[in-house]
Length: 204
Image (tube, rainbow, N blue to C red; front, side, top):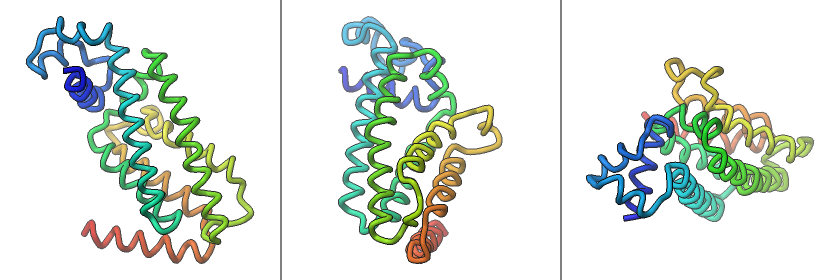
């Protein structure tokens, strides 16, 4: 039952944001009573905290698989973009705003994941790209990894990218492609263009 509650809460939080979803909404979707939820969780923030724990764990496993299965850093980073595309189709722009403003423990967990695993993954990708001659050797990996990490959160900023004008995927894709292109060598551009052309062909 605990896993069912977490799975349903994640769907609702992602779709509507956290603040507008009540314990009653979660109970109604599952066809159970609120009392049953309170047998497993003390409040909504505890549910959210565990949802983020599960989600970041799954995302990290998927990214780790991507690193081992891809043949170069460009393919890896575009694979991450594809992963974001699958996930952001159903993500409310209010999600991160709600967590940041109203759920400090859950936001601290998200920041820990962002500053730890995501930062490390991006830094390793950049260093690998430089060593393979795909990314320019004159860039500062730490500064660019920090830039990319902050871009993830930036895409959720409703003041900059109102959801009635921009889709979350389009914003993330523009930022990611701009980021990658700024690091590429001529060899890197050749590899990058192959993947982009292949992706565009598949989409058509």
